[in-house]
Length: 412
Ligand code: PLP
Image (tube, rainbow, N blue to C red):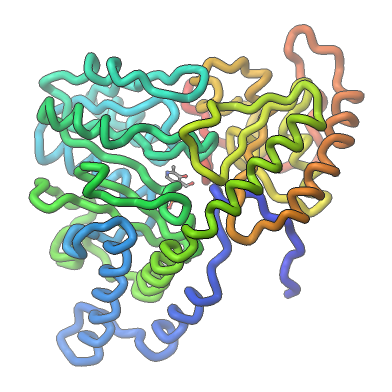
């Protein structure tokens, strides 16, 4: 199989696995395949590598290794934190935001079905939260507040230390979905002051299917998965040792890679400025700051993002719609609509998320290729005072509410 020739602008969806990570993982398939819980030496030796990886992941977020529990993915980490708080407090109210990833929102919808009240905090047109609204939303019955650190679609950052402080002042636990942050910004749980924090390896050049949840020492905890006594009784299931070792190596690389984020930011700014200048009727979605250094989300008037993505795909470029690569969904992004955007503008929006592998040449090529593509689509688009869309391209798979990145039909 030949490696695909792509220009990848979708690093918030997933990242390529670093060669150093693959090299670190391989011996744990071929030689060190034992069960780390086994009582003999072979098992203990594998277990020591598990501990080593735990230390590296703890170092990534300035935690203690004991505060790290491995999970199967970021989604499980979010579920673990929220379910734990509901169980240990016995309270029946959760606060979150309208712009969370489906990994959080779908759980909240299910909780509502179980009779648990959920408050979805709104955001303004720049994607920001009003902290006063959080203050008002907290009730004696509130078990946990769960607010993402960085939005996967727009890159908008929420003020986690301030949010956590409000919650603690009111005796409420605080969780943050930090899945988009490590490798892009410095992470320090001591500065954040959170009780729970979710991370996922595949966003930082680690393997897919491995995540972790940080649980602050002293926080009461109830396991999400029960069974064996792995993870000191906090998460059952035989550990995915190769993936955990890979996650550990990826965490080390992510710390080193932070020094390169200035370059990534400049490329993102170059892309944004280039497209805004070259294509009339283009707007940036979300306020310029504070946001992740790698993410640009742009609205192209009179264009259906899905059609534009298809053209980009034909030219070898990978990006996704504001509402994620659950491509084919006609639902506009719940994040963009929560920011007050019209469904029409939301459906014309594309997220470009850059990473360490992008080059200035790729950005230049994108800035050169996109204007004629947009012009072609605009020329073919029907006059649409009523917001009707250009025809859906043939052959595009239609996936229903799923998402890597948040595209999910949350509203009926
Ligand atoms: N939360 C955010 C903000 C994400 O971007 C993602 C992945 O797209 C997830 C949660 C889910 O993570 P995972 O794919 O590891 O389950």
